[in-house]
Image (cartoon, rainbow, N blue to C red; front, top):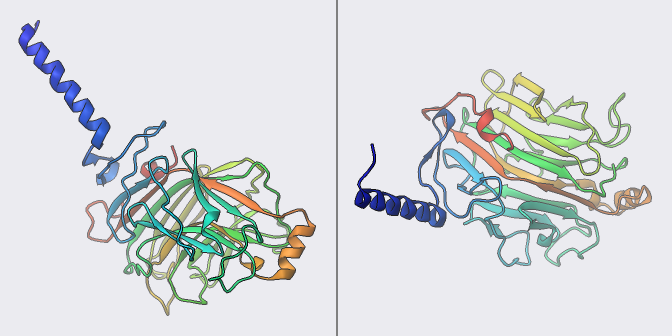
Length: 322
């Protein structure tokens, strides 16, 4: 049936107005798979990603796309908060090692350049990370989380055979205590039968378990990473990890420490702890490793408490890199 001209004209005007509102303000309350709701704002990037964000203890889906996120002026200290205070740069020893370039969050670690900040107790740069806020989130036992992001090794990446490093960790927030779990890149002779540069899953909460993945990234290679965790003891905890769609860890296992029985804050980037020592920096340099640069694409994260309506439902497709 053909609409009268007046109705058709009004309909077109309404549609154009709605499109304009979406472009300016975003879509609010967009339903997603598995009962999640994303409250979105800002611009849509070239792949249709729009930042929604959220604090570490907020329930539901949280998304950061980087193309619509800015890091404000640096503070000259350990790190500056950004994305409406939802994330924070965590550096040792210069904040400028974390930047946003062409819609990617870039981590650049050179032990001596820029010179470590005067505030830092270390003599070399050894950490370029971001973390969730607030610190000491201390998720109650039973809290479920999903994380999904892509991670790219720089075009000049050289495997450091002398010092290991990690690019993701969940930390309980206690000083001088290891992360609950982490993704490591190992050095030579660290594990029999495994080459330097291989990624390991390290579950310290499970009696410091080291699980090889068989994956050795090369320069310019991108990994698509999905992690699912239930922060709990051995009877109720769960840790599942996929790299490029392949399951590399899937166990009902302890994911919290007995002494610190909570889920901690997530951290992404580069942590090369042995570069705190001059001898280890020298060893790396002698092998041609003078710096390390990586980057990450959009980050998708889901946090659910046991009373959440979607608790326990599979959210792999929601957080996986797109």
